[in-house]
Every structure is written in structure tokens, then in C-alpha cells.
Amino acid sequence: MNVLVNGIGNIGQTLINILNDYKKLLKIDRIYALKNTQLFDWNREEVTLLEEKGIIICTKKESQYVNFDTVKDSLHYIFDCNANTFGLKNKEWYKTLPNLLGCSAQGSEKSFGISYMTGVNNEVIRNQKYVHIVSCNTHAIASILKTLSNNDFSNIVEGDFVVVRRSEDLGNHQRLVTANVVSRHMDQQIGTHHAIDVKDLFEEIDVPLDIQSSDITTPSQLMHVVRFNLKFNKAPQIHDINASIASRNTVSVTTKFDSNIVFEMGRRYSRYGRLFSHSILNNNNLLFDYTKGQIKGWAFIPQEGNTILSTLHAFLLQTNTIDEAHIMNILTKDLVRASW
Image (cartoon, rainbow, N blue to C red; front, side, top):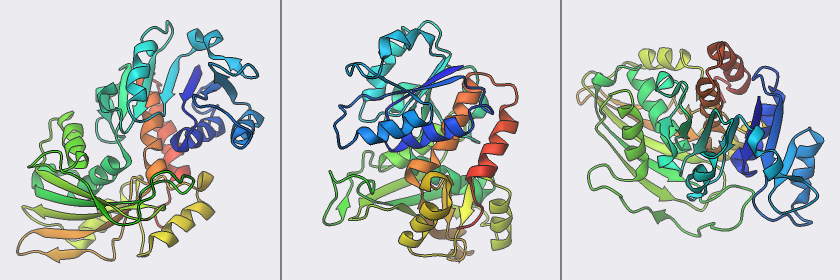
């Protein structure tokens, strides 16, 4: 199978490296990478590093790389890693590719296809051609809801989430804010797009949720964090929560309170310096009010890492890979640590 990663940014580069590492397991023959933006002397090395690993670099302009038009008809799957509606625009020419089995787009490209997160709506996307991988914050909120309720969503009365965002990736310097910036609520009842997207995701499996979200951007380049406040018909005990966490291979815990330390642990010890957990819960810092049925707490959110497993799982499901569950168990075991 020939696959293309369209966009060699934060998500794209991590994804390319993991696809290359697990090429045989994923039954991939060739990995192409499409570089959309112009290359200069100062950023050419990042492409050279991928070439040295056997990745075939394609462009639509630069003559020293493979001309994309010569390979596009041989593609079987496309991982679109663009943002800001570029993925949505690309879908129009994806439709013209004769051998394309499927493709996925990331976070911001919401109407690209069926919204998906691994472990939520797997069977909904099997054999489907176009899938939208929900954002990092959607992954985190959804994983908190699944974990604290132990998948008993009927026990959730309501939830309120405040996403504390970093302003940009550590490697960028384009939109770093100098003070806290509060986001506008898109809906007067639901709030920011985070809760809207989580509600839409769970509607794919006919699960209604009464949740709200707000968002504040801070002068940080490390990690997002989310403060949650969940109300239950019957709030679970701490031992129930810990048992639920232990049963989930995509959720991690930490006893640390400093995002600098969590981020640095990932940079030192995790594959390609990324954290792949859907969320990293401060399970030693939960607040309980059993008279009101409430649980409050914090979780760290690994941005470019926590959508990767869903992206890989979507690929396996869309191409109807027979042993997809076995493959995902291997990938998850290799990429996710239970504790940081």
C-alpha cells in the first residue's frame, strides 16, 4: 500500500516517522510526503532528514524532488495534516484520485468527513473514505468523560471544562501572546468549539451529553491543560476511578503539577519527544463533593501526540485491515506510558 502524508509540520513529521518505524506492521510499501510550502536553505534539512529514512519527498514546484503529479494516481491512502481549511480544500482533488481507498484530516478540518476518535466510534468509520480526526482538546475532554464515568455516560448529569491553552508550538514564533487571552463562546449554551466538537463526536454513537467549555490562551509554548467539573447521578469513588484509568491504555496519570516537568519527561523518554496519551490526569489532585455528585480536577493535554493513535487507527479501519485490533494494541503499548 502506498500512503501520502500531506503536510510536513508538527503532526505530519511525527506521523511520518511512526509510519516509517512500523511500516511492516502497518503493511505499507511506500511513504510519500508532500511539502506544500517553499523550501529555503534554513529549512531544507528537515526534508533531508526524512529522505535519509527512505521517505519519498514530493512537491508541486521544486524540480529536485519527485513531481507529485507522477505519483498521485498510485496513492491508496492520504493523511492530510494541514490546518486552516487547507484540508477541506484538498478534499476536492482527493476525490479525483482513482485508487484512493481513504483519507483523514486533522482537528480544524471538521466537515472533512466523519468525526473520529479511537475507542469512541470505531465501527462507524470502517470502510468509510473520508474521516475527520478530532482535535487534541476534543481527545482530552472525551477521554476524561469516558474515564471518570467508566463509559457509563447515562451517569453524567453535566460537565464543564476550561481549556488553558499554550499559544503555539515550541518550534514556532508567530503568535506567542504576551498576556492571557479569553476565547469567544461560539454557542451561548455550549461555549467554545471544544464542547461542541465533543458533543458532535458522541452523537455519532447516539450518546447525548450536557457539557460546556471555555478557553483561555496563555503565554506558554509547552502544553495545554484542562480543568474539569463533572456532575454525576452517583459520583464514582477514587478506587473506581483508578481502576477505570488502569483499564485504559490511552490515558496516563501524573503526580506532577508543573507542565514544564511533564513536557520535559516526554521530550526525554517518549518516541520522537512526543506524548501520545489522550490525556494525562492529575489523579492525586481530584476534588470530590459526594453530596452534590461532583468531581473536579486537572489534566495535561499532549497536543501533537494525542491525535496520532486515532489517526493510525482510522487508517486501519478505513482500509479494513483484518488484524487492526492487534496492530493497535502493539502501537499503543509502544507509544503510551501509564504514568509520567
